[in-house]
Amino acid sequence: MHARRTIGGLSPCRRAVLMSAAVLVTIPVVTVVVALLVGGDRRGSVPPPDRPGPVLLVPGYGGGTGGVNVLAERIRPPAGRRSW
Image (tube, rainbow, N blue to C red):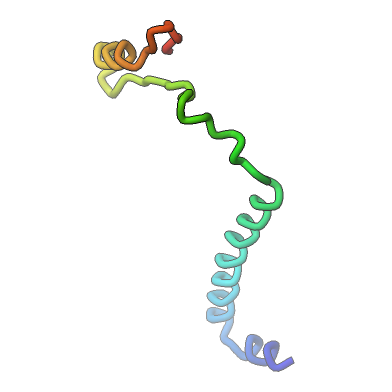
């Protein structure tokens, strides 16, 4: 009851600031808790170090593909893995 009197005794502007701060603290905490409960163990989704995952190469602002092609040739394995 004492807390209600304290919060109720604040001016409307201060009460709004207090409530906003409470919401700003509560939302990230709830998000993290839900992510941990729903997400579970994600360690199995990481590829092993000896077999890297796919690579997506995107040309820069100029749109030229020359540099991207050089990089694609450099990282393409001898087995002929496709590069996009």
